[in-house]
Length: 196
Image 1 (cartoon, rainbow, N blue to C red):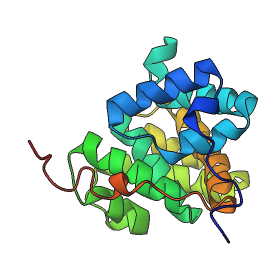
Image 2: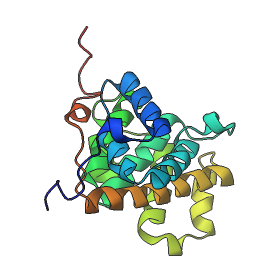
Image 3: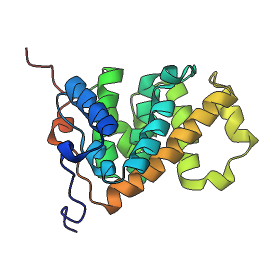
Image 4: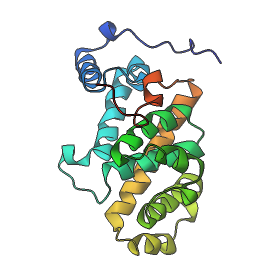
């Protein structure tokens, strides 16, 4: 499939609020992640998507606390995105995961097999739950919650794990069907020391 089916819009053609947010991201990251432009072809959907994204991934920005760290949230995205075969999200969120966890190998490990990854037993339980939500949410039962409780998670944490998994299931499918490609910058982030 050609990447030209849904060409990225020109930044200068975007509504002011979206352009301002994209410029803010560019200033922080040093580049514009393709997802910000790809979804901007439909401004109302862009706004809804990123409002929900931000509520899940930066809950403190909406005045909510979470039992999940930033690294935990990115680990869920990377692991479940791999199960959904989403190149864009595995590469992009794997980069962020490496940075938050300060582990250059962790993203590759959880993307391939989280049960063999160099992560904590708590994170393994979190990813077991996320993968069940991803692949067989209709089979979630009390035993799945009990496995989380044994590692200090509560019902709100379970909601966070499930919501992140479900939201990125949508994102994975949109990125994959549209052949959204990861920015080259993502591939090396968190793998090698920054050049000074």
